[in-house]
Amino acid sequence: MGKKGILVDMHYCTGCHACEIACKQENGFGVGNWGIRINEIITEKPNSDRVHFDYLPYFTLQCNLCAERIASGEDTKPSCVKHCGTACMQYGEIEDLAKEMAAKPRAILYSPL
Image 1: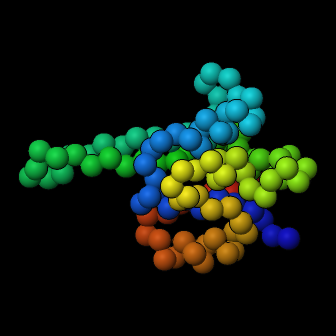
Image 2: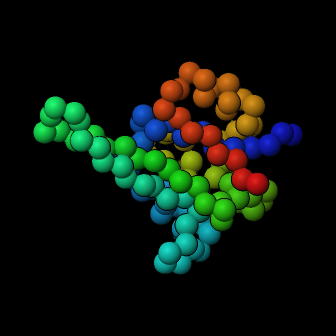
């Protein structure tokens, strides 16, 4: 079995924070502690009065991909992936996710240390 990771297609992330909440509840993280956090980035469009919103998931060092949850057989994927409303998060082998990432120009790949 190879190293596991999470692939996030930022093109489809709506910034709903469901992944944050699921992670906090799963791990019992208190105020100020996160396994994953969604950062909102607002940019102004040139020559326009419009703005563009991007949501950038940031995985902290506290994220272990819900190792205990998966090892116990409770589920087959981390809590954040399970509760993602847009299904823009995938869990699997790093090698497989990296191949899939090539077709997704606005994606990030995370794997804990």
